[in-house]
Length: 91
Image (cartoon, rainbow, N blue to C red; front, side, top):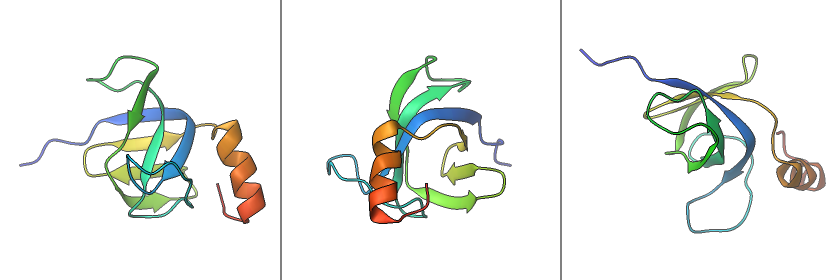
């Protein structure tokens, strides 16, 4: 039986296509999250992380689930919000 996934809060987050491409993407499955993580059982508070690819999104609850963790999305980064407004993407 598989253990339940840890849940953590992600602040100052953004969405990127991969760990080595410096561009933003819309919030959808297949992309990665980056940001500061809080409340994760194995990662230090406030650490900057790259997630594994997003598997599922719950827009109503503001939760993005990856292979290993469910992230409660807090405030998006200022830069990502500005990009999103320019691109017309939902952040």
